[in-house]
Length: 184
Image 1 (tube, one colour):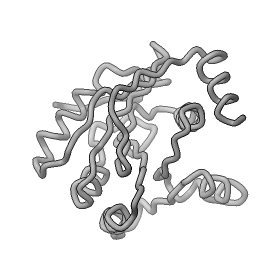
Image 2: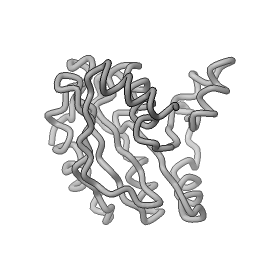
Image 3: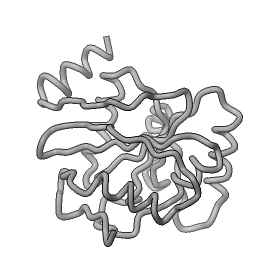
């Protein structure tokens, strides 16, 4: 029932289409961009519901207040304390290694604001855990959710981050002026 509702709303009523060619193994990280609006969360949740996917996601801790905190946790939210250094990447990598299934969605910009310096934590989690990174783009201009590339982290962070940014360079966010891949 939920899947049918999400498909009806996202694809029929809102006019989005999905173009996903990459396989989804038991363990992976989704690198999702652009992230320019709170609408991205709603589109992502509708897509997950429509396709029967379940994924955890990282979100700044400020969103985890009552009653939203409980809702976000139930949906798979993991609060992030951006002001202090934690062992989050190590902890998530260990969790991924020990789990039979691990799906985590991360927005590399780390904010809805313009940010040319993308976060690399998702890359290090994937590398430490030995899992792939699926590149998902949400293009509001074309109304398409697309995943046509997988990155297998090899430790060459700078070159692979360039490759990731190049994949996303033509996607248009809800608020296009808030998205940049920075200098490549």
